[in-house]
Image (cartoon, rainbow, N blue to C red):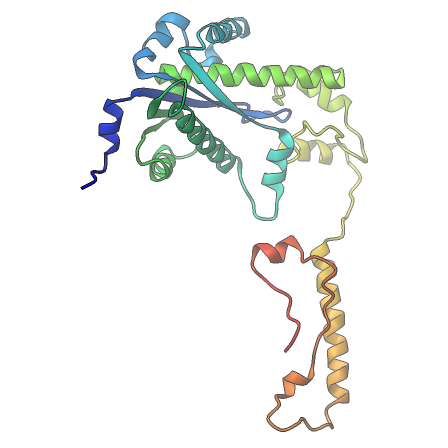
Length: 312
């Protein structure tokens, strides 16, 4: 008789890994949000604070973060990480789409994606282990967030907490990776456009100066690094009296076409009033609509499973 091995029994024969997840750049109006998942053997976790002097990245200077990040590269056999860079266009597109998708949900998706990635990685060479614990700095309600993750990953001990980047060394280390990675990306953007953009936060003088200098009254901001879903951008557009442009909606066009079709149908119905339908044939079956299939249905209808009606 075959015997199923429980997760706890399997872990006794494998190295156990612990993972910390944190982000950098939730609030900026310029540049990406970066999520990091740093992981190591559980037996090495205590050394993160002693060896690297890790702490919440927000409490460290840029130079200190860079030095600790450089040390991680030297200890690749002990410390590994994955990052998920969510560029500004992705944030804007999701937050401004018809079915609203807020930043918390985007953050949850990043964490889930990274847990899957780490879980898969540690089970193979060169790790040959199992992911036993995950610590995450919360986004939104910690208890609801934790319950959501526990349902998805029942074999992993999940801890979601406020100030996790200060409480758990593995999350502190992850916050450093996220912050350094984001800073490097913002520096890269500045080089691409050959202009100082600062940290990307609206309160940063260099960021504010860039926003004021690059504004166009017709086109607003041309660069895709801007988070157009941010209220900061709306306020700037309004304060600078940007030209208002009204875009025609494909859904409105479809509605107009349907109204025209209804009107033609009504005319046809009046003409056929005097005619008598054939026996056993429904009156409605005499009216058919020829719908062109050359034009694809609008995304609005596809998402809701609404199909075109060709016959009545």
